[in-house]
Image (cartoon, rainbow, N blue to C red; front, side, top):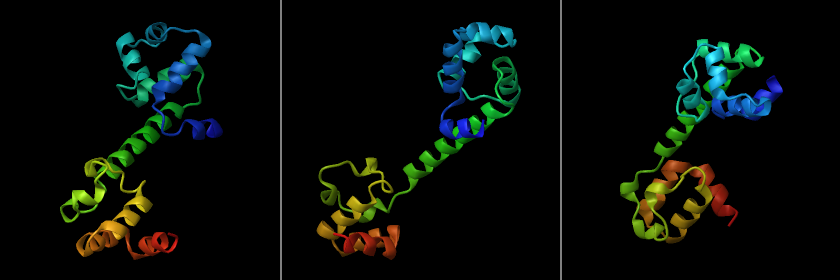
Length: 152
């Protein structure tokens, strides 16, 4: 299942369970009852509102004939993805050193500073003052700055 697991990395295990149940035309409530779980629990997992724990994953894997540990691996990869997204949202330069006028067409709090690195660098070095350029240099590093500015 390694190859299959790579495809689903980062997805909530409920998506995989739901897909399999639909493929087999099994209602989630019936699966829940068959493994001695509450249908509400299964519904919350399938909708991605709840994570899956080890005992429950083993029951579901056995009932659906999945490889042992596969749902827990999906849960771990999902949690890693969520954590990385949270960390990326907190990864930003010192906004007090950047004037909103430089980013006149966007909300500075909603900028994905990693994803939009090139645009930010180009904008600050085209329209920013010395303080703003120094902050962006500190944030991204001289190597990235030079790489993007030399490719302009």
